[in-house]
Length: 451
Image (tube, rainbow, N blue to C red):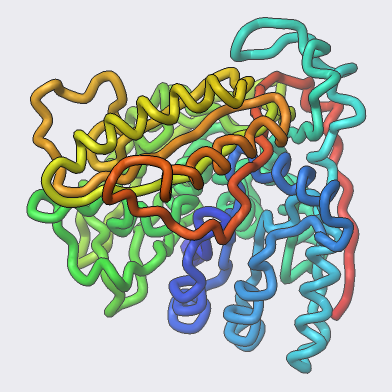
């Protein structure tokens, strides 16, 4: 087969920019536009919001923004859309897409919803150990709010076979979203670990959006790329043998070169010979990269090993609350004043009997990133933000942090700059634990809607 398909990235996470996706939809000459919108805690955070806000629909809060930006171009040009924006409600996301299509006067579009990743009600029956600490999974029972398995590409492929032009999913592994079009278009066998290794490897290169075009690569004066305010999202020109050329829309900022591709290839990969996904174990160690033109890198040599009998499951649990606030000092002596402010707060937290599992008072601009590893001879900054945070069992205890920081405005140190509280200063903590479940106990279900 000499066919080549063009698979483009539409997002790398929930908060990603919309404009590059719209540009890919309009000018990318795509066959598929794929959106990855989840982080580890996304589903659990959605469950928490759903409990507090009955009006929350359970899918990506930017679904409307993204779909309004790309649907007209994609539907006009016959571009298929695959997205995990369904979060905890893929059916609702699919229904909303149908409504948006109707508002645009677009009809005759089949939309699929892939469900099955949420296994909260059954997870304790399917697994018995926590990967991070080897403790029994049932120890999480009282705090667990959500459990979702990482599904693979096969349900998406089936939806495409049934004529879906838009597919909305829940938790599907990031690279699988991008590989599904390759499996469908080229007829790859789900057990062909060599081809699926290539496809998942390419999916990994695409899933983080602008990271492969310079978005997490740029370092001024050391690793410069042109026009970083206008990063384009990557496009893969994929062939049936699993080889591909990575490129981007002409005229966009950033760069695609050997270095940007290498950095993304190894991003979040603990073992390049064994990158485990639901579909296959990817092996990056034989990959070959070749610059074949401006902003064009050919990727060959990706391969894989047979998939595992289990799927990873993320288990979100409530782990208390964080109270957080901030105030500022500037000019000569800023550090000296911040140090006294820290001592004042430490003593006042004792006075109000703050019951906290952990308290941190960091000086942004000096030690907030490296903590105790900050060099003793680090230069004194001209200005400092004092960030105060405490982890507590209850929201009431967490609220004490903001109350005491408020007091610093007039009962603290000279020249204290205090912002006016305009947002909630306490938040619930979602801890994420991992386990493994037999893949045969995580069946997918697909429903179809028509615009």
